[in-house]
Structure formats: structure tokens, C-alpha cells
Image (cartoon, rainbow, N blue to C red):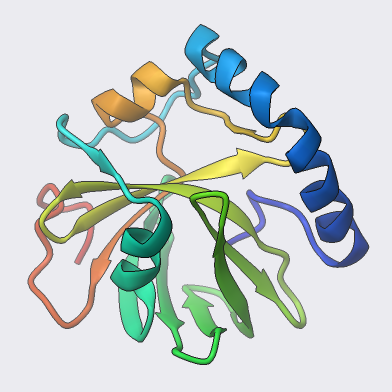
Length: 170
């Protein structure tokens, strides 16, 4: 997605190796919670997308949305695993994949990417929570995520009417 979830190249490969070692600690840490950044709020009542459901929600789809700072974005998740990204300031192509129940996007040039917890907030509204590569966890606590606080980005499939809170995603 954007520079908030910095990881690329060899740093990404190293991170994936470390992730396997940290998995048990991540669960414990998420239960304990982490600091909640000030930021956007979404409607409560969520469903975390995982595995095949996460892949199915994105493969071959185009999403539009906003970042917490109000910057608009568009991302096409192509069937061949490529991603076509643009925001209010730049565009890039790269790769997307689902791993460990996270949606990951990494770009070939110009932008770095990262992995995200994806929550379905409503029928066509998705909250994206960037994974911090140093902690292997979202910056928002589990409780904040469930309550709809602190998302990094929010988006909806562009081929359907958005069900995100009015004014957040066009």
C-alpha cells in the first residue's frame, strides 16, 4: 500500500524468516495490546479476513479508498499476483500475495510496501491495519481493531457501492 508499512527486497525476505520464529510471541503480545495511534474510526462489528476468504476478496478486484491522513488510493489486485497501485501523488506496479492471514503488497520501483491485517467492516468496507516490521504486529491493539479504531487505510471494491461510513471512502 504506502510508505507506512516499510519493507522491501532483502529486508522483506529476512522479515518473513523472523516471522516464523515470532508467531507465538505475536499472539501473546496482541492479547496484551499495544499503543493505539490517534486516528480514524470505523463502525464496530468486524470480521477478519483470513486464508482463502482473504484471497477471494481481493483476487481480480479493484479497490479504492483513503489513508488515515485523507490521501486517496486505488489498487488493482490482478489474478497473476501483480498489483497496480496509485494514490493522489504517485503510481507503481508490484506484487501482492496472502501469507499468514495477511494481505501483502510490495512494489517494483518507487514505493515500498508491507503486509496488512484486513477487517471487513461491512458488506463493502474493509479496514487495513499495517503490520509493523519491527514488532510483526499492527500498531493498533486487538481491541482497537475490533472497535474500528486506528486503521491505516480503508477501502471498498470499486465495482460495488461502498458501505463505508459516509465521507470516508468515495
